[in-house]
Image 1: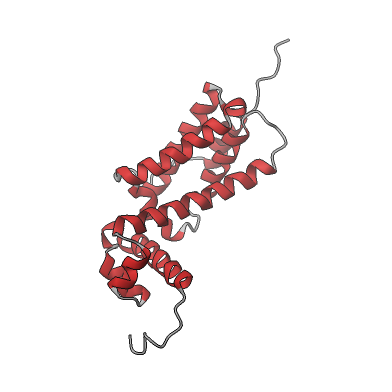
Image 2: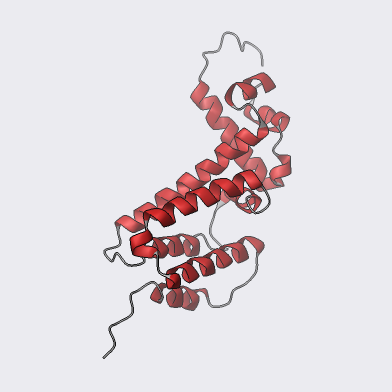
Length: 188
């Protein structure tokens, strides 16, 4: 890095580059490939520059995962905002997000990181907190056991997609699960 001392420092761009390169490495080679040295090299910074932004590899991985959660959260909130029916609104949004990110979708650098929360307790805790917060926030609209079953089915689909397991007729499955998020009609 010649002339590093003369270059204008842009900490936001460096932080962004570190996050982007970590996500790319995780997607291409797995989370184990995300090392301080590999990410520093890819971003064109020293290990000291890395450590200025992230005190550890885990701090970087947490930041990348939090960004993934923010992307999912924004997508779900957009879906909620466009849904006029209150019952099951979060569950429908969650379901839509999972189905849209199906096995053929371009989910880019998030695949390895998404799978990593299954085995990484820190990432699992971040995901659980996000999910628990959303369930609490939508308790009045999505507290029904039937809706919890739909969300669990969506989680199973999401894991099947990440693992490359075929689930058969996705359109029919989506339709059936979506129907389960609607209130039951009043009996005659």
